[in-house]
Image (tube, rainbow over all chains, first blue to last red):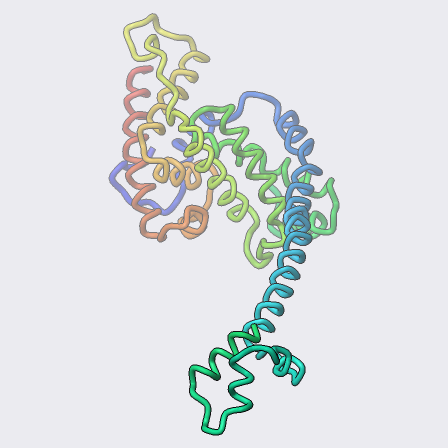
Length: 123
Length: 184
């Protein structure tokens, strides 16, 4: 055995042999190899199938959620950003209303409250 | 252990789906992987579980292996990591308890019992070292890896490997010398 204080860059055969004997498995190596190889297929399956399963599980809900979000977004955008079309019929519909009649028959420029009330009556 | 070129050929076949080629790799490195795992874990059954985890993990990661480098250190890194993970998960005891009858004072044992006693003492001494230190000394003195290779396996600087091996050897050599004095 070598000087215990020395830094040595070579393995110590005596210590190595003693440690090897202390750590050496006692049973037949073939048993261990067979045990590992018995898991060969399942290890490969675990490595690939779960990934595909996860992707598959994400796929349908993901597509459905994306489609729902798209439709909701389109409807919301259309409702908020597009002004409501004002047709002539709609504008002239409440003929009996006092606001619109006053607006049409007045000699002077209309008062803002009259215009406002006529619009309110349309709704 | 086979040559590095043979290992690379077996890896290539394994990657192509050759189950038997992977089996040869397992045969070649089984004992080494089990010893390294036992150096980390102490308990032989846990060590075998970890070594198995290491081989199967290596199988799954085989495409990541850089064929310009030797296969052994790459595999031992995976095995050592599997053993460390197992120890953390299960809080495995790090050293086997020493049989009180082996500490001293009993009848003088025969040759087989003496070897068994030395093995038990060495395992206990290993268990008293840090995990990194005992793994480093086993990889160096038992498995014959270089400091640079061990640095790669353990993910630490080469200088740290030298220091760990030095301190582990000092402890283990003292124990071995004491034992030799006793049996004289």
